[in-house]
Image 1 (tube, rainbow, N blue to C red):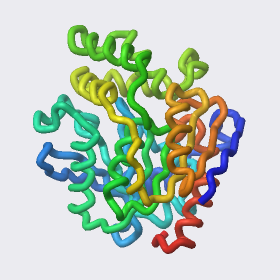
Image 2: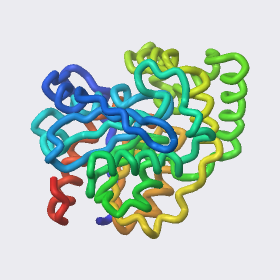
Image 3: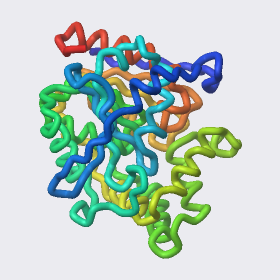
Length: 313
C-alpha cells in the first residue's frame, strides 16, 4: 500500500456536516462493560455489536476515555458505514480512565507500554480474538502500534496522530513539570491547559468550544494520580524504531497543528511499504473529535482494501 498524503481544509464539524445519529451512537458506543482480569490488575472493555463479526479494538489518549475520544467519529460514520456495520467494537479504557476510577492498579506501576500491551493481549485472549483491527489516538495509538508489532493477528491499524518517538527535551521538560504539580498540588490550571494542548490545536483551545470545555471537564474528573502516572509513562516512552515485525496495514491521520505531527510523519516513513497518510489541516491530535468528517471516507477506502486482501470485513 503506497504512502499517499492528502491534505484537506474542511471547516469544523457542524450540524449540517456531521449530524448526531443516535443509531450510530448506540451501535458504536453503547454496549456491555466487561472487566478483564490481568496480572497487572483489571481493565475495562465496552463491547459494542455482534461478537461474530470482525473485531475492532480502540485505545484512547491520556486523560480521555473511549467516549470522549471516539464518539465523534462513530457518530459521523453512521450505521451504514463499514466501520459500524462490519465490526464488533471492543473499546478499551486504559486502567484509571474508566468511569469513577480513582487510581491505577498498583500492579501496573510504573506504567509502561509493554505492560499495557500485555493487558491488551489478555483482552484479546479473553474474547477469543484471532484477528482484529486497531483504532488508536495519540498515546493510545502508540500503545496499539507497539502491541501490533508482536501480535500477528493485527491486520490493520487506524492511527490518529500517533506518538512514535522518545519524548523530546521540550516535551520531557513540560511532562516533568506537569507530573511534579500533579503529585504535590493536584490538577492546576497550568497542567489542565498543558494537557489540552496535547489534545486539540491552540486555535480551538483559546476559544470556548464545546470540545475544549468537554475535555476540561473530563480532565477534572480524572484522579490527579492517574494523570501523573500516565504522563510519567509518556515521559519515559521508547521510540517505535523496531517495526520490522509489524505486518499490519497502516492508515495514519495526522493533525497538522498537533505537537506530535512530526512524530506521526516519522512513523509514516517507517511504515511506508504498507501504510498511507492523511494530513488534516488545522487539527490537533484528536482528529476523531475535531475533524471526524474528514476521516470517514479514507477509513472506508482502507477497509475496502483490507477486504480485498482477505481480512473479514
